[in-house]
Image (cartoon, rainbow, N blue to C red):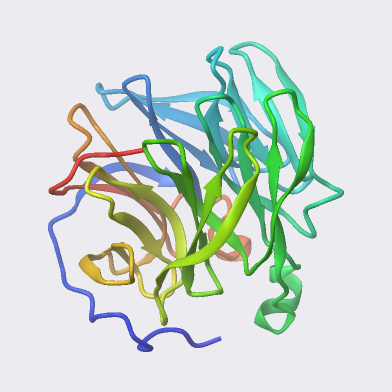
Length: 292
């Protein structure tokens, strides 16, 4: 599937600083409690990195960790990809929080958790590794309530991936990696979604992990074009930063929220990256701090 050079601007270079090395494939980045957190698919581990630059192994997830989030009580939710579950880690024990196997048609992936502990979880939709782009199929976005119950939140999304919730808690914006767009939904008081609409069309891009700033822009990893991009509602691209390598997730954080963490790897196929530690997490400074 060729999606480069189909509407996105030509990448420009920017100064990047190396934040961490030795990554196989980093995903699900978060800034939480003064630390940077991420999952490494093929090291099967969730890590955190503090202001001292020390990387700490938090918990091992045999089923391949991805999306991360926190419950109101401080426990961490972790997407376990290959067994299609959301796990809960209280600092000591890893337990099953929700089983998504009745909803997810293939591996689960990214997740966003709201202030009440409701989680929205995407999945691939088809066996990408075996079927490639010939197997593209729409999938359902799952709603996992704080009590662990599961239901379909939205249908017909093409590889729902990085998502954000607006600061007022009223809108969920979901990136479709192979749909080349962001869809927005109204969030009701009971966490259900309605009023789907295209928030931004980004043809030629493959939006992956993303992060919202306080000016309403979304920075996203463009997995098709080795860069991160900032887009605003309506589809205007305001900024772009080339990495020169595969780019799969990003997150705003740091003390003032203006540090953009960028997760890269030579590729996404496990045969190319697993057990090699060639992925790098970069940082750069941006204009607007984190929002949402």
